[in-house]
Image (cartoon, rainbow, N blue to C red; front, side, top):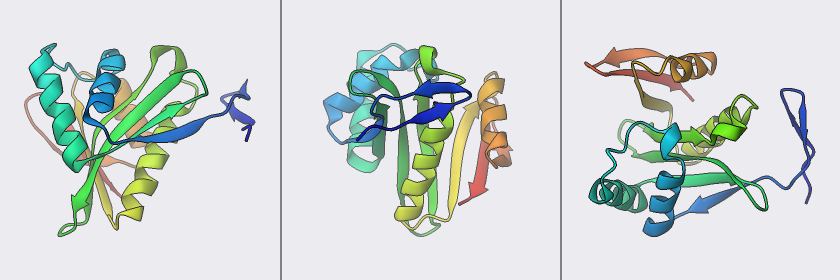
Amino acid sequence: MKNNIQFKGKPYSDDISFIRIKDHNRIKSTLLEFNDGLPPLQGEEAYVDSVSEKIAANGIVYRLQTNTKHIGFFSLYANDHTTQTAFISFIAVGPQYRNEGYGSKLLNKAILTAKENDMKTMKLEVLKYNTNAQKFYKKHGFTFSSESENSIYLERAI
């Protein structure tokens, strides 16, 4: 089914869909594909492998794509049923797709996924130097929660 979606005045008429990724190797390749839009993954194969294994075991990953192109993805933990708090570990959009509304589409899907898993709050970490991401999340209702030496932690009710 064709979507006629318009992002910031730019018509887009290709099929756009979210694809759930569960396989460790596909998660790993997605992390590497969008590495430029993520906090430094420290460039070590073993580190990326470890992160993707953890996400495959405990997280939820969706990739936003057209029939032929990967646009972006998010990784979410929605398994803390005691506090009903979800945590976005990664959200990234390919450089050629930024500022066209795809980040909002990914975030909205992450929020919906968290709600479907009975979560009531969503948290995330943003590096202090990433002011564009901070503005993006604040625009979407996230507020300051705490900070560390290098990061700011944001949260919102969902």
